[in-house]
Length: 65
Image (cartoon, rainbow, N blue to C red; front, side, top):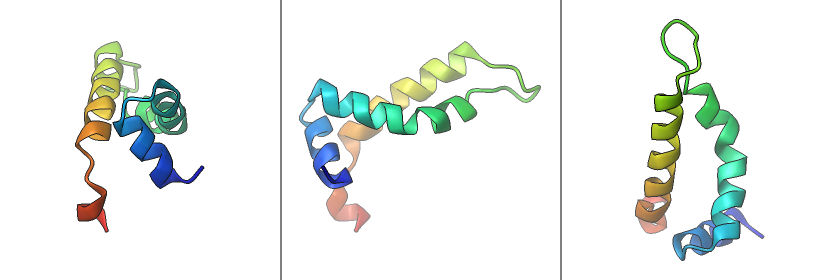
C-alpha cells in the first residue's frame, strides 16, 4: 500500500490506517516530546499525538503537490 492510499484510508477514519501512520511517525513524535532540560514531558507527548490526528484529517494532498 502506498503512503497516499494509507493517508486516504486514515482520512476516512480507518483505524488500521491511522495506527499504521501513527506507528511510522511515533519516533518523530516521541523525539519532540522532551522539554528544554531533556526530560520526557507527557503533556508534550499527548499534544503531539492529538495534533497528529488533527493533521491527518486536515491534510490536503492537492495543495501538497
